[in-house]
Image (tube, rainbow, N blue to C red; front, side):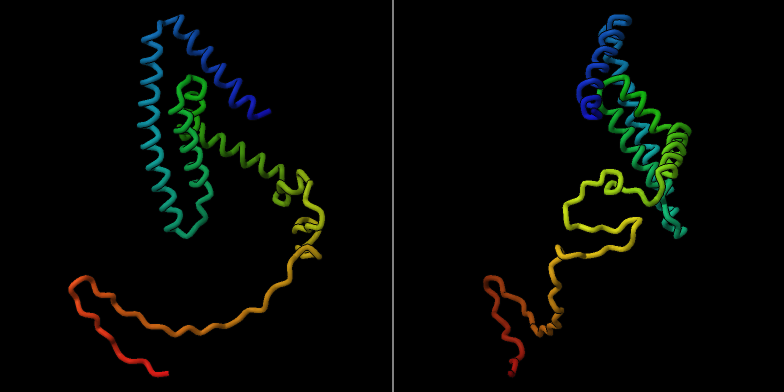
Length: 182
């Protein structure tokens, strides 16, 4: 259903908005507006992306997990991609992802949703259609390898001894190097 909305309904809605706006203000002003919001979006993408990268580097320098910075970076990338696609609906969403206050509000919303879902939920436990014989880790306990896991081979220690020498190019003499005894 999501893919139908994304690839069929959204482009049709974008075309409808462009046609309606073109009927109101004319085709050339509409095209100019689409061009200008793409240019403005590219400038905003560059400035916000650079700022997010600096905050990411600062977080790593302070030895803390850059979770907020990673979200901001992903939101900026998605916002920039939406701004580069022609259309006014995607441009509105793209600008919302590039502007720090709306990006922060969306981040708080996503954190609240993630807390409601809980840390033990995963794709496997929300949609439990695992292959038979597979026993994954989850709320019931640690991973049980079960009969479907192949046996492990014993580890072997290898000791390699080797040497290297330079291969001459045309016109150079080969240096035999020291002889090796066995």
